[in-house]
Length: 339
Length: 286
Image 1 (tube, each protein chain N blue to C red):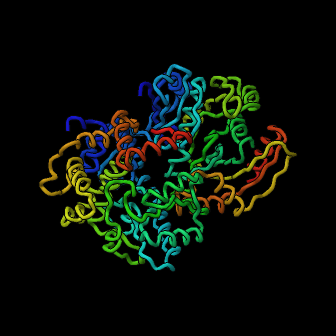
Image 2: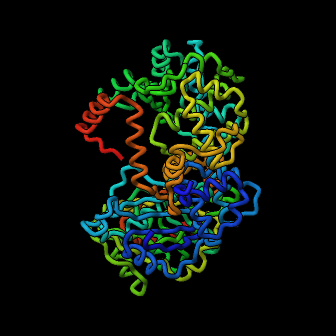
Image 3: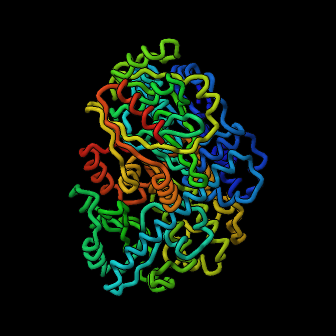
């Protein structure tokens, strides 16, 4: 834990225990707001601090952030409705994922959360039908590059991203929750089979699967960019649905390590109510915390080496070495620069 | 960051950090009379930084960052650090402002009532606003007018007036005693020189005004004034607003109220003297 002091700690503290923010001076508030914006957590922070006697200028900024998040959620839910209408004739289960799912299901993880693209999960065998229906309804390809397109279709857990030509919003259509090249292969059929249907016919993952997905997304995919927000999602999900049956479900998906780490870090930063075994950090947890809090009072990314390490790791866990070398070589020839 | 300052322009507080002393010194110099952010907590952070450590000294190039950023924004040479700081602040407003409906318009005030001027780049909204300030109007802003959705009032955002190319000698002649920034050649918009708003405009920056007239000036045509219907004004102003969509229903209501309550005119003009005469005539006839 010694490694993880300072950085965005004041942000994590303010989310965990909002009254800690009341001790901040003007410079502290300025840093807190800059960090929250940089971590896409401004709306979440604003909801946590609602009703507290914060300084007037901060109150205005936080009220703006709440209004902005509310509008973002309205737009995100409308986008989900557009996808629902486009896919309804196919009569296939359509599972909302991540931010849109939290908002649609009215979960605390959705409170003030910024929502980017629309992420949905459909049965793998029917993804071609879903793609055709979306294209017929006005979505178009984003990536014109044939290598990228082929790469997505052969190796990824989702279609190449589509963007709607009129609303300018992206949709990611998943058939599972981790790339096919990763060593871990979650049970996508079980994710869909156990999903929960909402009033409008759209679905969300079952509570334990939501946590498994969030943990997979955080630790078994990506380079931890946006990690603090994802960990806050996990904290909220645990707080609302508990951890009953979570370990067994994680084991079923091959995600035991990721879910345990999520539980430990969520407890360490936010004090989540997790099983006893997860109440102490272990292994490389300190390094993960160091990466998650790598943000200074100007909202700048800090700890360059740690970030680079996680960037390299994100590729190493995504595909086998020879394939990675081939992929990076192709991307480099096309002029892609990492970082 | 190594070098930093803070200031408030109308209701909006900014913090500016920079890897170099130059941009901060230029801002501190030209914004000397401006107040500090309310409660010491700025609304927005702007960062001017070198993409690589050695680029601080070696061919220094200024990247613009902050709370809200555009991907792929081109860096500027250090000699244009002042422009970078101004662009950084404008960017925060354009992308991050959610309290006020933001109109890309200049605004001047007289007797508590505001005249808004909007149009494409080169239409002369900055120049006309500066000339009206020289004639005793209060300058509320040359770039953004802030419409409060709750009250319908216009709030001032009197940043430095950004004079471009031919407008520079016009204003140097009209306001020989005014404070000007350095002459900046080779910017993305040609030559730029900043003009500091006069003392009266700065002293009154916290006073909002009732919008009274919307003008769409157009430079380079024979003098002609045409009424613009609310429906057309609405469409033009949605184009002139960077946050109309983001404000959703509040934006729609604020804009609807503005265009239904405030008359609008298109004003073609061949030279600034004709334009000013026509503006004064229209204003007197309200």
